[in-house]
Length: 77
Image 1 (cartoon, rainbow, N blue to C red):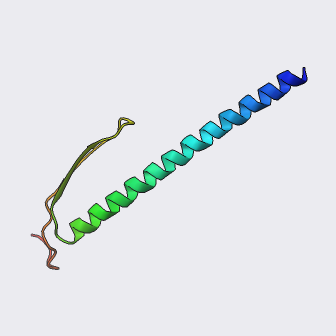
Image 2 (tube, rainbow, N blue to C red):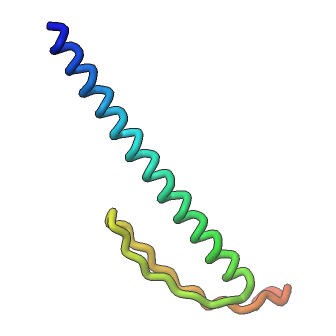
Image 3 (spheres, rainbow, N blue to C red):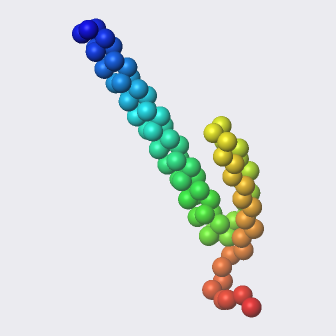
């Protein structure tokens, strides 16, 4: 009986550890993606043109094309 309870507890701990590791990996991926997109938006604000077409392993796809002109402070008509 004690061995069964111990085995069940070990299985639950391993399951929780696996979920925690997966969540941590997803958070790091999201942070890296955000840093990348922040860099792109800063480049666009500086008047640079760029294009991104990425397909990630998890199935997400990102397609962006920006043709930015330097901002001169006047409003477009």
